[in-house]
Length: 539
Image (cartoon, rainbow, N blue to C red; front, side):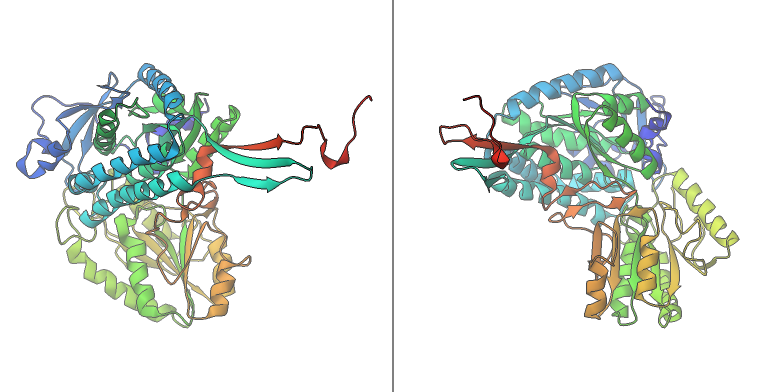
């Protein structure tokens, strides 16, 4: 196994694990405090098994999950080891053999029940997402809603996904196309969306007839356990085999999952570097892979833009989830006529957010903590590098001295569009504002970074809008007009180009990635005929 796969425990910058070994019995855990009773509503305990394969177990290292808003321990999880992973894979393969025989609309009915169960637990599960990740209350609730939404989508999909009938050049021949399930789908998710990314994959994979094995991020194990409990209850009530399994674990577990030929598809969310290594390793065994990797997303402000709306979009785009979305706005490219006033107005909006920095579960909070100390260190290092390259901190730039991991949302101006720090994705609330002469220049800057996930333009000029979405426009997978770079809906396919990995999840025809295609020629003529007029006989 290539060396870089050791980063699977950290998802290489997406989920820097700051989990410690289980502490002594005297350690205080948030789960034992009355104000965190919602954790027990989800079936969580002070110590939780992290492996599910029809029953719960976990014989690996015990790790502690922490609240990034306070640094306090929440609860612990007993991870799985490689042997448990191997057993889980085997059980997932056997479950698939039964599940693939279930009619697709009946599979859709099971996914519908999963969605309904998520609705019952949306409030406590969303609060857990917020608590463990650090995202604010409404974003935690919104993440669970994404899982619910994709379940609704998958129910409809179960009755309509299909192949096609193709005309044959031979008389009394018919060509059919069928989409069949792959087998066992492995999902490796990141800390920033520990519930929704699993949901995008699982709902569609299950509907199309696959079984699913999940390895959640090591720093958000409680979300993985709680979510799996909800799904497992639905499977148990319907007397189904474990078509959804979970194995939390370390580097060795991640490496084994990626390398195992029984895992027909690996859906990996994480950094570009680790994703590249995962992609190579899976291709080495001729498996399939969906890669959802980094983004260095630009928001372009044309001279004709609705500036008020653009400012609102920039605020959420740059600061939502404290800058830790893969679709976060990292660069704002502003027409030179609007640049100075836009920066002044954006700084004024940022100033209004300072009183709203706080614990992620506080009702008034709009800016929660970043996820770990490593995020803080990366934030600090990046700002120092930007200043050394000639950048000016127009707002922010400080680490806040309080319990937890808090930083000021930061605006940096004065850097070249191709400065090394501008071209590097930093998972923190830092945005670079650049000055462009025109839309053509802005598009070229948008496209010059290695990633190609999300992009957006604000313009009232229809010619510029259609240029933006055309062949000369953005080279990203998400190409928005007059809205944010982040906050995608489930109805469209989600993913990006270039170093973002090329994978697509969620809506549109992303379901095809969880299937194998069969082309079927049916001869109902009673005589053998070759294509292209070939004659081959001995009579």
